[in-house]
Length: 91
Image (cartoon, rainbow, N blue to C red; front, side, top):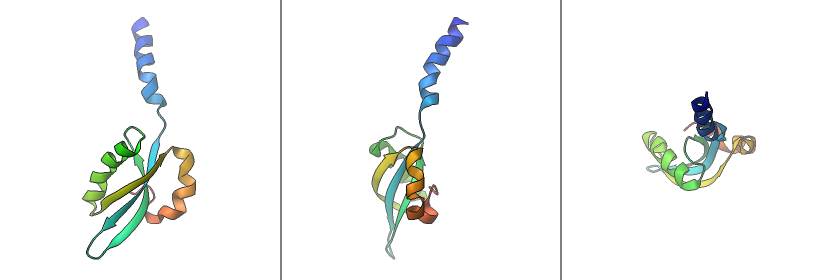
């Protein structure tokens, strides 16, 4: 029983971690195309980690990450939905 309590105490911080999202800007060349999007990030919730997580996802789809605008929790999703359009939670 004691071991179960210790295990749960160690596990609790990872279960309590809030969802993390990033809004970003990306581009394609030839012809030049730009897009703004919002993505869920499964990494620490900071700009550097978000860039590291998002860069390969965008690259696989033919996009180059330009910048992470910001990172935020679920409270910031709705206000960005219209701006991101089809790139809302796409990558």
